[in-house]
Picture 1 (tube, rainbow, N blue to C red):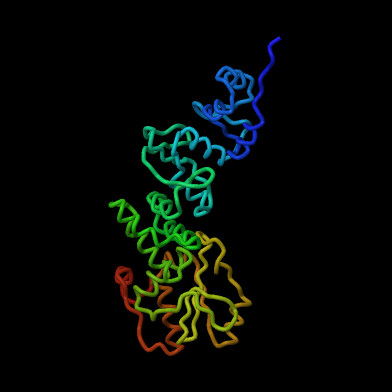
Picture 2 (picture 1 turned 90 degrees about the vertical axis):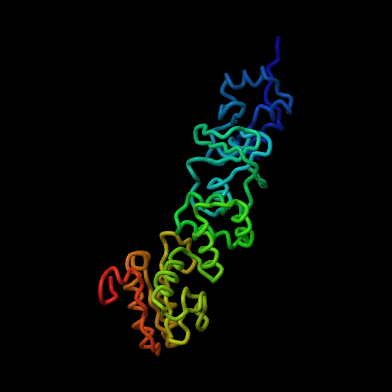
Length: 310
């Protein structure tokens, strides 16, 4: 009577470390023959993910990510938005999982996209480094998403390498946006809306430079503090913000008011749709606090005619 052969215990331990995924090569190294692999597949013990890649149980996105790396072969590394998700730089997993593979031709297979290029990586599954991930992922993001990406990467100390990597790659479709985001985040911006306010409201209209992430009294840091004029501006960027300085804290506003500081709050819609109008509102409050100048008209102001309001 022929004894049935089952998967060795080591294979289950390896599968648990890889979100349930295993490659044929790994199984062979554990002593599982091709005939046994074929039988286990026919019995439904091994669930096919791709040619030469199986799963021991139905899985989630992480299992698919492991499948891409195993199918990619030696030195395969997750990149772009897949790496950004693993680094927690983007909130949602991408529908297409990009995998850099130096020994495999570039092509799309289902939800996997293999890119024939070498990338260094680490982790389980291996992913490109933080700075490289930011540079690669930014190619498919808009300007506001690039800011959010850079702001999250800052918390991991990954910003210093980005300019060098940009120089190494040459042309990059989001070079200007990345460099702008690096500058704004370096000055204290923590969300795309803060960048829009600093650029489209404050600088383009010649408002005085605010103190970024300052803190009058002990009521907590604020987005923009015009210390000399007793004015705070808070931006509610929940469309892209992940919680920092994003809630309308009435108690904190009252605490600031007790210190003689007025708080103005603006939403994403206000700053993005009517930066000129926001600039006029801020300018009036600054003038009440002693600012002796007038806001400058920007090109957008000129487009909507006299008066400076959109």
